[in-house]
Length: 231
Image (cartoon, rainbow, N blue to C red; front, side):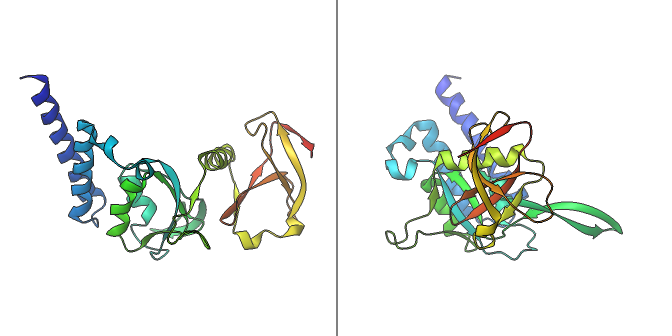
């Protein structure tokens, strides 16, 4: 068997396994998504993906909303996870009773906010057949211009979140001027060279750095194993 036929057999095995997994794990996606995955995998193997428009090919952090109920069994972030897509959604813990036992589980801090790192070409077909998954659009910008966050800003925010055992999230309207202390720059530790405001919250004994994705989300990150200077 020559290499050409071997590669195509390998490709179709991957396609079958991927589509089977989508049916078993997601259960709600239509055949269109599976067909899209098949087409994309074939294009990638053949090198045809490079012929797509540069704008649609560019990976970006798209700001999305999930319109499903808070108690939905299959929220958008679980669907995206089953498709092996890179995403970030702020999570919080809640205490529930299940089977007579108290357990902690993670749920989204904001049900209708998530960030997806992919290309428009990959995301559009999923959005088109999933009415509850929608783009957020730039207000006052080009008609239906999808809202995005720069790679640098998003990656720094995610890195900061992952360094904190218990980040505190805030909606934009929850952050008041009284909560924002002096601006500082962190020296050393996992947040080295980060800048932000010291978070002032009544009753809090720990120092936290307030970071934000403007107009979308803020987080208080505990400052440990480092120094800081006032700016």
